[in-house]
Image (tube, rainbow, N blue to C red):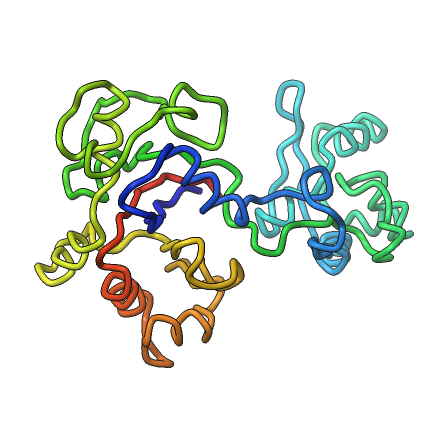
Length: 280
């Protein structure tokens, strides 16, 4: 799934890439390969696997693969399709319906045989993995599929790949500043920046005019505004907006996402904002 985040940044910077890297790095979806264990929490899927063990599903061979019918799509995504294909080959049938608990009653043996989770985590004594608790994105780029939205001037056909992103790119060491970029499009990179970086005060004006681009999927507050735990809030509804975030912005306890966003625009009206497309 994709969303657009408005990242509040200084109006002047040495490198937009570096500014966005610093602002967004705490929210990368990652695990032990990137962060030390003490900064991670265990995402335990054991209960989901127990439900999957008892779930009634139908398997059907299609070509060289297996199609699964029935059950929650997210839960079915934990299945090992090679293991399911082996089951169909063993019984010599193109289809099968039932509970995998009837095929493999032992829960741990079922997990190893029919799911992607092959062994229990020895520390957590459960199935799952260690993740960054602040993880919100696994990839982002300036503008992207929302190219130009933050400035209220969406661009179509401006290019498939942003030069400023979470991956390797040509814009990583680009020197520039918001005020210079907004003053003229002297290069392709600056045109991209000009379309996707604006002043927060402009968003506040868009709110007052009732323009739909005023509110994104997520807001990322400035790096030094508050601890990282409270800098990202979004409209997805999966997590409540932290009370500490609302307190910083002088937003009411029951403020909605739009009201909290407006409070952020008012608090940081003298700063700039970059629109980034992110995958989550």
